[in-house]
Amino acid sequence: KNYLSSVTALPHIICMQETFLKPKRNFKLDNYIIIRRDRLTDNKGGVATCIRTDLNFKELARPVETECLVVEVLFNNLKIKVANVYNTPNNNINVAEYTSLLSGTGVVLTGDLNGHNPLWKSNKLDKTGQTLQDIFEATNSVVINTGQGTYQKAGGGMSVLDLTVTSSELALKANWSVLNSTLGSDHCPTFTVIGEQTDPEEEFS
Image (tube, helix red, strand yellow):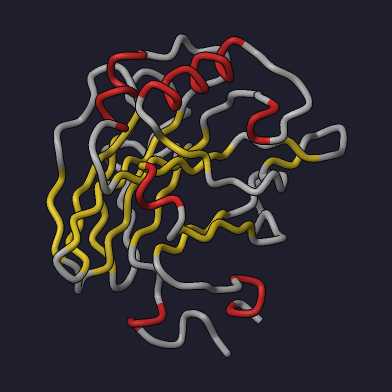
């Protein structure tokens, strides 16, 4: 079937990183309300969160240093906080801001974090990966990645740069998967489903 055949079949929330959008550039997506955080200091970066128009949500305070958008969405009386994050390569992680983002229950943090760690099946450990692991452990958060690559390296092969992390009580209810296509990017879209199973490869067929 066509995954985009009806509004109710659309993803509830779409998180995008490295949008390269600037304030004067308009961007619309049918059936979604779009919140943006454009990077003004150079031509790169930027994040956008698209929320389906039939959902009740509110935007929460944005971290100062971390390139991130945070929304709280109500699903059947369950509040879920979704943090959409882009961390540039070799950036110094703001530990306090990430800790705040991951504190509490009903949390989903997702994005391009550019950290390597065997915890999520990278073949090496770097400073960013170690810092993220320390934060995840301190906040009792769970990386729900399966180890499948998400980034197509220019020289061939895949890296795991895109992570999805949830509060512990959501982890057992979460299903994470990767669409086996970059759709013209160098990153493959990832899917997080809470409370039910789905196969994005089958849905997009």
